[in-house]
Length: 127
Image 1 (cartoon, rainbow, N blue to C red):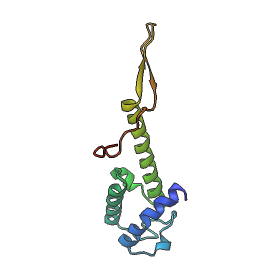
Image 2 (cartoon, rainbow, N blue to C red):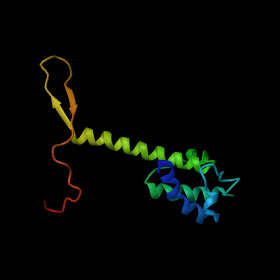
Image 3 (spheres, rainbow, N blue to C red):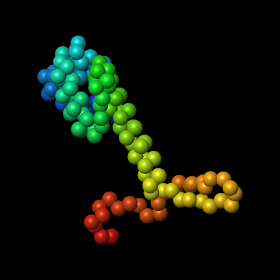
Image 4 (cartoon, rainbow, N blue to C red):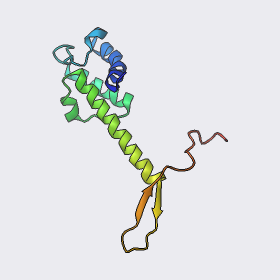
């Protein structure tokens, strides 16, 4: 299952319930206004639901650009990718930086390495 298919499977039940349509009508090419008869209020509620579900922010401009279900799927996927890449950069900046010393007058170089001990997922649990 691709990421797009997974996201579509996750959002389909809410869209079906919100717009009172059949599940097979909610496809990547389905147009919200023309095919699914979604009002602007429906679109606001759909955006709010998926902001909470996927822990992302959808701006008003992005919401206005959503014409099809595929547009929504691609927006959610891009927001998740942004969130994951920024989390990895933050991880390496805060947990993996190891300063290397140089004898030249250049600025110090930094080597990013994975920590030797993995972070504990449950800090309250003793090993």
